[in-house]
Length: 83
Image (cartoon, rainbow, N blue to C red; front, side, top):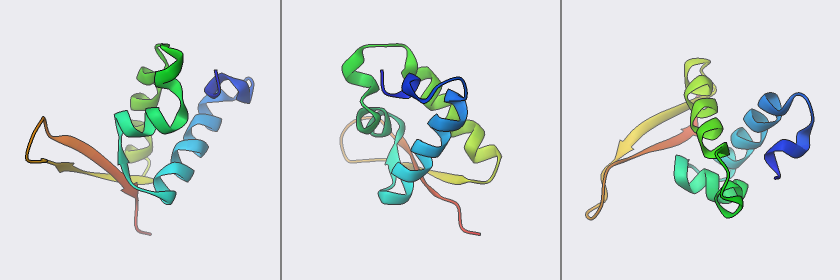
């Protein structure tokens, strides 16, 4: 899988890739997993993506807000944190 291809520091690599994706275009967790290609692999790495996003938010790298579309459940949308 692409996320694991980064070597022993896959957690740091995942965070870097997520930050680049969020900077390119804000998104919710499922969207970011899709853009990372972890949904196609059917692996449990989606859990790692959500954990990384929460840690990145705690570290002040990204911010999130709830987006409630007209249909479907509310989603937490991640954007790059303002400095």
